[in-house]
Length: 213
Image 1: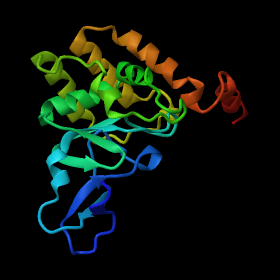
Image 2 (image 1 turned 180 degrees about the vertical axis):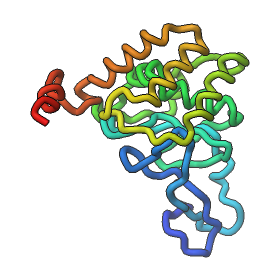
Image 3 (image 1 turned 90 degrees about the vertical axis):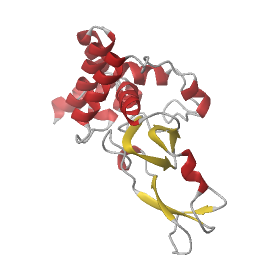
Image 4 (image 1 turned 60 degrees about the horizontal axis):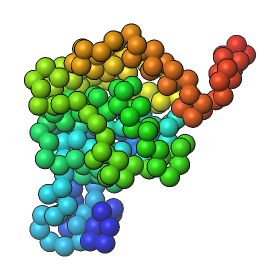
């Protein structure tokens, strides 16, 4: 997205939608929503669109202020700070997005914190080596994709806002798809939400702040 491309649309090239913003001001729902238009500086169809994907994963985000690690859509998009995963159809892309935003998915991603723990950077190798469920399994794929459909319109709170209902729905779908314990995933989700780097406060500090309020 450099050199032959520009953020400003001048009308001299062919503009195309891009997922650009991240963190609190970035993607607000698990359904991908372009928030910018870029332009190829040359005539014709932008070649970058050949690398567009139904699934896009974060290349880095704040552990406290971000909302999502992956988004999916029936449409194929490219991103700036969001990396498209090519060669995956819409339904398994939706299933993958649910898993990657679930508590197990986030914990797996956190194993590879990148340059900084507070604001990790994820290069393509991190995502390539990340274990995910077998999305060729009908039950796994369809269960997770159905959860994406059910939650696609829900605005997702920031990570620091705690273990919310939409995250519980993603965890329950993962538990149903993989035969895991939903109550245990919910417990892990709450523990993850209380981590200082996620909550933005030290252990116990948020309770004191709540008492003062």
